[in-house]
Length: 425
Picture 1 (cartoon, one colour):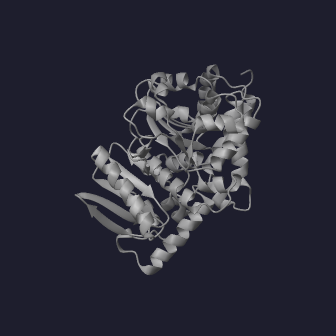
Picture 2 (cartoon, helix red, strand yellow):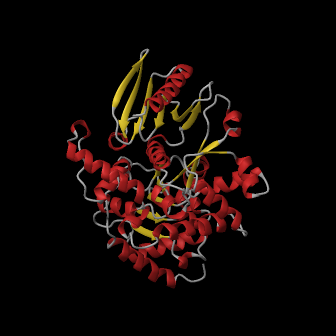
Picture 3 (cartoon, rainbow, N blue to C red):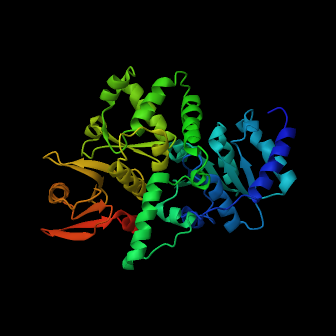
């Protein structure tokens, strides 16, 4: 980088703005990060753009370093475009000149600087502490561990959970062990709002603005097309729109290739992988003991946020069942990372989610008051548990609660708002 004079002004501006930043709703991840405050390992926070990573940085800075003993740099600013990894030493020198010799770095949207790992790795060995954010899931990949000296702490930040949504709305968090009639009504109403509006903080804070659509365009144009050098974005947009319009559904890569005339299955697979890397979508596999069978089977697609889906996708109806299932998936994903599958029994009965480490099966159904629906869901769980030796199943509904015992196996039926606030699976 030829001149740092502009960077000097930029750093002063960024520090001032960061100190004045609204801390917003306290994120649950802050408690997890607290446990790593005194470790030497860098904390790497990855998640969807506008999911609140910068706000989480401000929250941890306020909680851990109240006397501002840190450096803050946001590499999302376009004035850093000429910046390269060789400029980090000069940047560090300038930060010391402006703010003193601090031992903590808060680096926002670091993925914009190629080779940043080399600087961080070198500084870690000298005793510096790093908190790093980025909008690319590759920041959490195993490959990153080989680029950084020693261990690093991966943190995934999702849009608001249901509990965080309630806190944002200043709605009292009810005790699920003794819900009153009034509390049930409030929780159900809040959940309907949560599914409709989603959990992206800015979109909730400024509902009059087209935040979701702006995000969607930024993800496709900047995070996918620009990053992966896709010049013809029409096929990418058509595929993304189709997937968001069919969340919680089984999809075939081969059929997508034919339907959208995308040239090859590899193109479909590559685009979906890119969308996953940018946190817009998740594709889960059918559970099988053979990895090859998992890979060739149809996938199920989920979106990072139901509010975003409702804003940009197409739907013939409200699709409440699909959005309910998507919401359950997101909560499972927060807890269990990638260890989530769907399951099909030998008799071709489908179970929405299977957690193999816990041998737990989960069905999602708006209501099972219809005896035929109840029988279908219970039979699928019973067959699945028998096939893998599991003893616990669950049916998550909009508003029903019960316990079923079958041959030493237990099936819990829980209302979704109660399950989200306990989320014990």
